[in-house]
Amino acid sequence: MLKFLSGSSLSQAEHISIEFCLLIIVLLYHLLQILVLQLYFPVVRVNLKSFFDVNFGQIQVS
Image 1 (cartoon, rainbow, N blue to C red):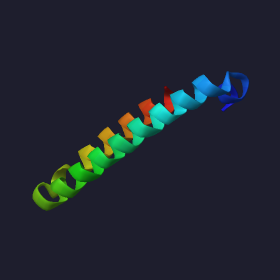
Image 2 (tube, rainbow, N blue to C red):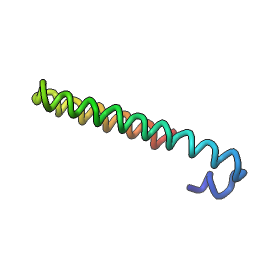
Image 3 (cartoon, rainbow, N blue to C red):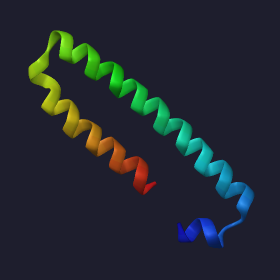
C-alpha cells in the first residue's frame, strides 16, 4: 500500500491490474481443481488447500 501511494500512479496501477488478473486466473484454476478433486479424489483436498495457501501468499508478497 505504501509503494502504491509513493510510486507513480500509472505504472503501479498497471502492475496491480496485472497481478489482479493473475490472481483471478489462479483462483479459477484452483476452483476447477477443487471441483474435480471433490468429485474424484476427496482425500487430496487438504494437500490442495496447503498448495493454494502457498501460491496465494506468493502472489500477495510480490
